[in-house]
Amino acid sequence: MEPLETIDHRHHTIKIYQDDDPHDTPRDWSNLGTMTCFHSRYILGDKHEMSVETLQKLVKEPDVIALPLYLYDHGGISMRTNRSYPFDCPWDSGQVGYIWVTREEVRRTYKVERISPKLLDRVIGFLGWEVEVYDQHLRGEIYGYVIEDENGEHIESCWGYYGDPDEYLVLEAIEIVDGITEEQEGLIY
Image 1 (cartoon, helix red, strand yellow):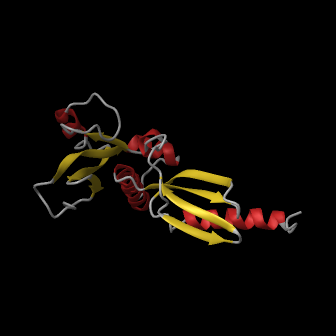
Image 2: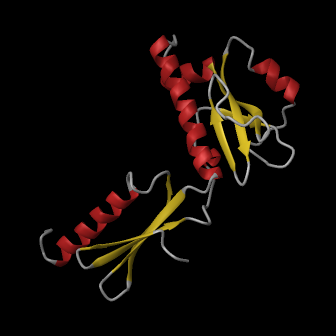
Image 3: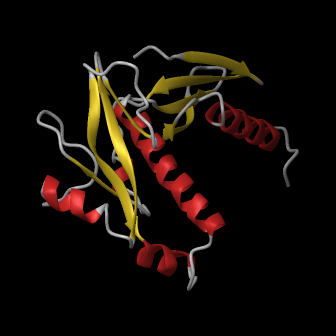
């Protein structure tokens, strides 16, 4: 497999790769929202035994905070949530479900008796973030790095980074190289 990017730093080589075999899906993590989806060709979101009708009734309940989920399917799939329709192409996209949480769960999670407008905005933002990370998973935007010494020997590696690798993965790998180099030079006691 060819690296997406190669960085030479302090006599080490950092190679950035796409993670072709992530060990889990973000829906296996501890999530605030429940992602309930229906699609004829894909298994999406969280496992459930709910019917479409039951889901439609549930998201109308006053105790439920819900955001619609839309899927774009054209040469790959992408998921978004938005109060308005997020894709330009109605032929290759449509609503596939909801991400939702009960107000009771929000009160329990945040240890509050009342959900303020500020907390409600925070919860909605967090549900949106869960969808964004799941979308990165669907699109294969998961990366890892391998650090090699000047002889090409494997020193360190780490996988499972979601999103743009230039945002934090590259910086973390550079910090690892800096730590290794400083330790070798006797700068860390």
